[in-house]
Length: 267
Image (tube, rainbow, N blue to C red; front, side, top):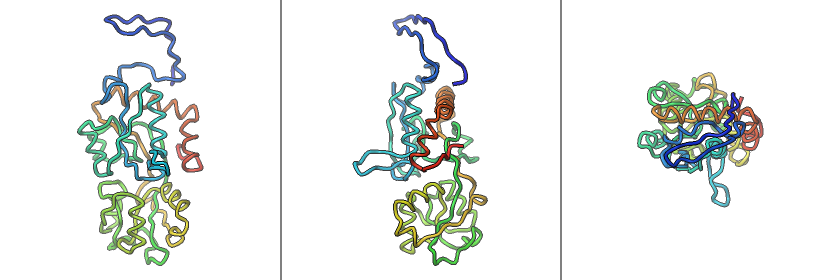
């Protein structure tokens, strides 16, 4: 937090609790944002749960990943219990409209359409974009994606980028499925986050040897991930931004990034 909040004694009327000496270095001040959460005492977070390294199940079936860890850290700052709701990417944004959760943490980028309806926190991840193809593919540049097929989630920023490059979209629910479609020959390529490709390559070395990547950050745009909320939840958005700033300043975001990406992608 930017300013130290010193409370010597605050007596609240109407049966409310008396608060004293709240340490500003570890919590976000002002409880007013708590009136905007879906369920009292919790921060409900929407994500895919099948998109490594952002959110996925480990061998024990536990929900883990970069977005999961960031969500837990933000909730802790807000003194709320994190509750995760997993759903397919195409349903994530709609879930905000129906108050299914308070925010989305799913490597979500800004675009003009989203900015009209939703609020965004501070970017907590910055990476490039890559075009993944078979090693034997004739595609050597982003421009050559035209008239080829690309395995994408149609409503994602990467899906939109593939369309602009002239590709025919083959519907895919996630990155792993896109890799399978390329390997089977049902799609020629996919555009996705460079960090996601790096994790896939490490986890699937045999399959990765049959593939290669082309840097398309210029064409598809750098991938910046933001917490995404309803615009009406202004107090909650402000609190989330304060929590993010604290987590960045105390090194928590860097620590989480290095755990899942081996280096700091939060800058």
